[in-house]
Image 1 (cartoon, rainbow, N blue to C red):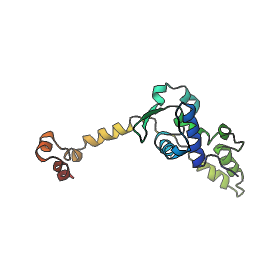
Image 2: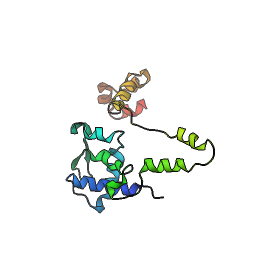
Image 3: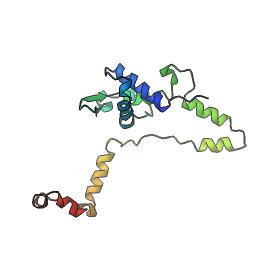
Image 4: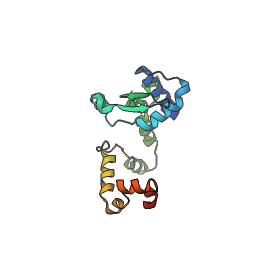
Length: 168
């Protein structure tokens, strides 16, 4: 049984999506596309709702190795959709939900199918993911132990970078 969306398939599909969005990437840029995929892409819980979001909420800027800045929008989640809808890349193979159901249906041992189904994890990104880094930094900054590591302007002017190393 063929499973859609090998890593190369995802990378090639992202390459296609980015080119359709007006960027000019070739197969020589696959290492860049791979990095974009790892850093910027995600699987949307409700892709139809993501399509309805304001573009500003979807867009992220990505700096290419040559320093040029590109903006990536809906491609961020459209890439992963091929895992669920292989027809997007011209395949008539089943997607992950169908493959999972087929595997569960093959379980013959009594109770095993139910046990496996009960252990299927439904994952979604945390709803506060856009502010979680700031929240973590805020909590860290408020800790007394962390405040002892701060370097004041006066300390830095007197000791330079040595002030940083002396606190670590």
